[in-house]
Length: 266
Picture 1 (cartoon, rainbow, N blue to C red):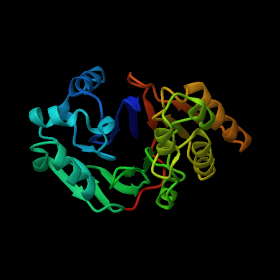
Picture 2: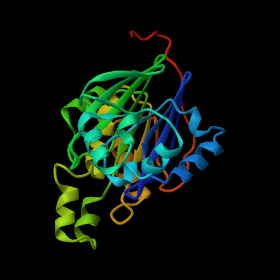
Picture 3: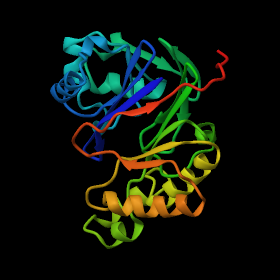
Picture 4: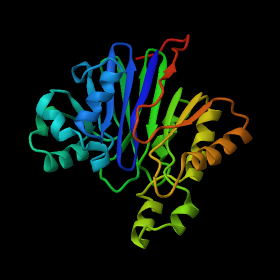
């Protein structure tokens, strides 16, 4: 069985928790160490219960808590080699905790087989993840301007966390400067609601039962807009699974995936 929670999900800060078997993984640490600690405590856990941290990329909204965290806790930090180099430039002492991997490869953390999914973002070495453990599968795809070819390996995971960052018309008519609008809309930017809907349908057709929309822009999107766009597309495809939006600043509900009857080959 897998259990998943988002602790925060927005352009201001991102962190989530995956529990499977005896392994507990923090995915990104883009909020303060204190907030992470309090969120874990609300779930009956401490920092020392974590088996590792998976970092998607080196932007502040994904690593803001790392500087304080490494001063108080010795937790392995898994990231791509390029992201690791950026972290070393930004955070003194982080190198002793890093477990870098070549982008696009597989590795293990505890009970989990982790697959790196290279993404298209303006942070070199950015990655999504697929995590398989004990007959359950999980995927997270955020901070990518296009749907990368490697993301095909996420299709059909039991639980998919998918970026639905902005509504294009709202972004174009909104207050962002022209250059920032082009960054968000570009190939190294973020997924729109429409692109999220396209990938959600492909994954749903491949067997995904639960989809969580994440990393919504406060200025250029709303939870209802994202749900309407993605939900209508999924409904038209005949999907009857669970669709929700991750809360911006609070811990989400618990998402649970039961193991399949078939065993997984390791």
